Image (cartoon, rainbow, N blue to C red; front, side, top):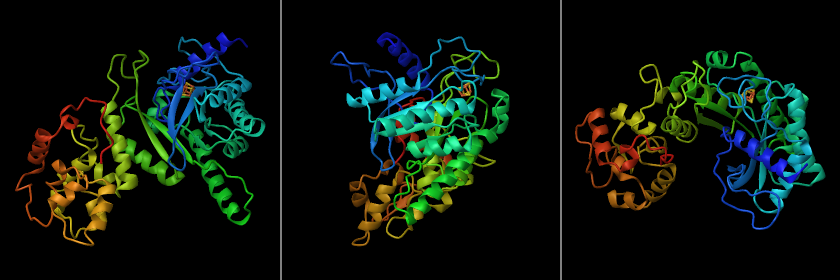
Length: 420
Ligand code: SF4
């Protein structure tokens, strides 16, 4: 295989992989100083987080962008007129080792279109991971996409060689999936998730007894949903997430704003803006559910089926529940402090620690890095000043928006941080 052909395949299959956000992507600017294979500049390098929280750069590619399916939202769908390519198993192994030795990457994120069948494809994904581990003695991070419908045996093997496995549920609702990918079946996504969950539990419990038991997918499993392709509400999306987190013990659900790639009448048309801000608000809600003790129904319900794009979901919730505020910073339970807009969990812990020794006032709180521009309307402290006065939720919202930095004013900015 010529260097040029491999380069061409890499270009096609790294480009096709960028639509999968299950590992947060960002281009690497590392260029090839020598004559070696691969210039990592923009060529499929992304960053992800390992089990212990380390950020690692990964070679992110598809094994192939041939596919027997025709999912309307996917650039790889069989009816799409695009350049196709497929790597051999050994080519992916060689590329990974080559990039790894040059310090471009610390691991591999490997997904694939489905050629021939789920098992045929999964077999090849597993073969890459197996060769890397057993023949190349590769100890870097491996994230494998599981192919819906793949056999239990292949899923088991995949977990023995990969750090993380993921199956993309793609469309948040069954109805949406039926509309946009009628050949697909939600059960085909669920079956491998069940298998992975059960194997993780079993291997963990065996390891407690037999120390030599290998690890099974130590980074757990994750999934991804495409947002805005099939008209679902934020409430439906977050209930789906909640279900998958709870039922399959997922490490992460990723939300990927739909990028219009087709003139299919079932989809938002080309030129429609990618819902970046909505994606960001969904991540914030996900964060609230996982780390701040919120339940989905508190944030999204029959009366509020979609998130307010103007304010983060915690502030949105607080504005609708002013009867629960102000919270006394010197007395409130951790659960309630965590619900104060502008207070991140780090600040909550600092407050709880500091108030053991003294009563806290505004100055103390500010020094802890709390975003007082929001928090001051929901807290009282030693000074007894309380900023809300008798404003209603909408009045308070408009006051906060008026006094806020561009984070709230420019609601179309895709550069919002995950809130504190
Ligand atoms: S099966 Fe996967 S790769 Fe193939 S068209 Fe559907 S979403 Fe795309």
